[in-house]
Amino acid sequence: MKRRKLSLSECAAYTAETLPKGILLTSAVGDKVNSMVIGWGTVGVNWNRPVFAAYVRTGRYTRELLDQNPEFTVNIPLGEPDKNAIAVCGSKSGRGLDKLTACGLHTVPGESVSVPAIREFPVTLECRILYRQVQEPGLLPEALAERFYPQTKESSFPGSNRDPHVTYFGEIVSAYVLEPEEGED
Image (cartoon, rainbow, N blue to C red; front, side, top):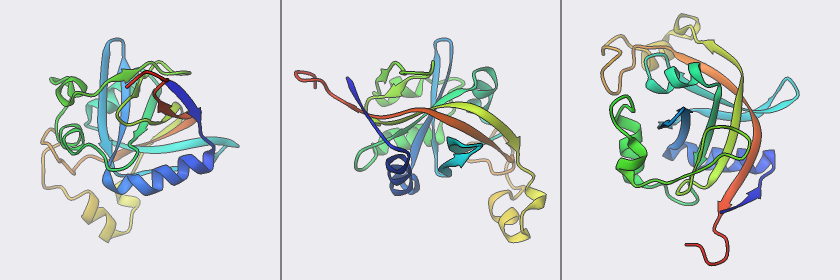
């Protein structure tokens, strides 16, 4: 696979267009690689560096991996995302399931980070965490806190909404689109 480099504005455009449909955030520790669907995220500039701000609930397996390895990739499809991959990576935990294998997704080694890109989600932002902060839902306007953090489901339940998010600001250290080499499919 070759990598066609992207500018920050191209990263922002791909993200803004596709995020409402679901994109993947991939984390890894050793041979454990996990992708989860994210529907919130922002491309921008903080501390004079290009960043992707990702939001991961405190009870998620991805958060455990990010605490052990402060690198991640953001994986965005070209066109419509694979519905099966979005369904599995958005509803199953990677604690007991290799979601990439279950979805038939293939990894490509990262260029600048230890976390892989995903061939089927070829727009890739490689990130190193600069800063993390647990959000305080009590500081939100009441209507937002009630909508996004109602205390109706246990934290371990799929689709739980009780746990606050951790905001991760990842410096974008490489951004590209994976493209097949001549003769590759």
